[in-house]
Image (cartoon, rainbow, N blue to C red; front, side):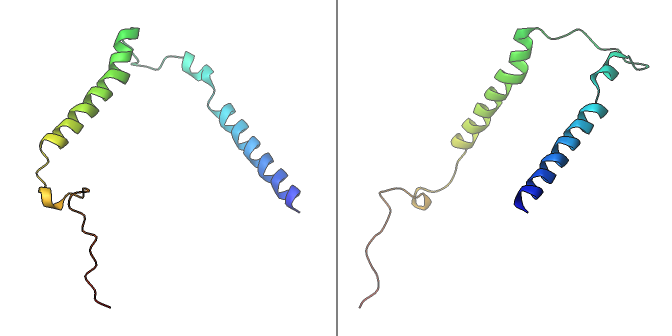
Length: 91
């Protein structure tokens, strides 16, 4: 019974994948739509700057602002200096 279910699941997954590939044919991208006016393509440097360097810089700026503007008090931070291990209960 287990092999039958596995075969059924594999067939369903393969059929679904095949139908999705057939329905999203890249040949449809060759025909231009009315009003479609694409600009010039991006160079390699522009692409790397836009999709690699800009997100990294944005992340670093946000992380830096969070660290600089952190106004939490020192006594609320958990460090090895303020961890109290002394038991308070008496036996």
